[in-house]
Image (cartoon, rainbow, N blue to C red; front, side):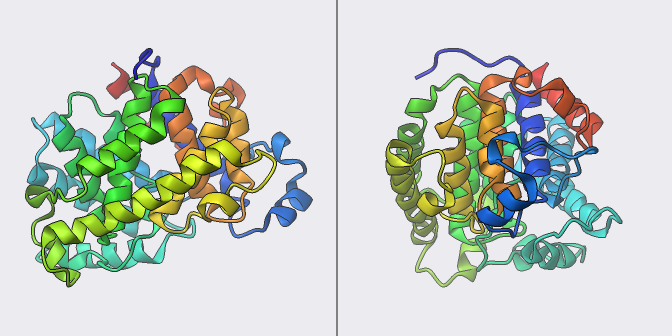
Length: 339
């Protein structure tokens, strides 16, 4: 499965995520014909100067900082991660820079997380599986020296603080696992099968230590049934993705095959589809992801994270990375984990 480890995978993934965000931020909420009319052929899309990003990159950085804080204190644990993560999410919520069309689920959950005595499970929006759960999770797949249990638990916990639906948890876990696999050298042609195997292996595994009694908010008979609902929805969209990779024309909107990306499992699948259509052409993959009828910035975020994790920091044109907003913050986290 593994052929090589990419060079500076963390830096490449974080820069790719932010570049995808910057390309997709102006095209979000537009139809493909409207995007083409406003910006020209999709294969010529360019990030603006400066390349401003949305809440997707802002929350990725919040998560990355929380992960750095937690791991600097020792081994990653649920309590050691939840506290700085909660603080970073609340700081983002209160920031004057939080004016980039943030998602309603994140705003509602973070307002409740700001109440210090409220258990985070009571702040979680248990019915939401929006893509805000997994568009920000890439740092969990990039941080070194995490066990599989830590990576999965942290990916699901960061989702659960805002998006408590089991599909949001499973899609976040899968997204982090995909980033990890690509950074470790998994071939694109083998990725979907590897993710399906992972989903099947974890289908009824509920991370009690990381999630506590979150499952009781959903009305399922038990935690295994709760989490299996999420994995089953992810498995279904992975089956659609596997067929789409084989049959979809790169010239058609990828959202027609795997969904518009407003919900977590579709954001994962469509972001992966754009990457897998152009596994050796990262800039083209980003442009395709940004020219979509759905949640273009989140789809392109994920595409950029996948491509950057596989190809490393050298995947992106220096002219593009030089104009990206929050560049210093992205490079600081990437350099830390690449070292």
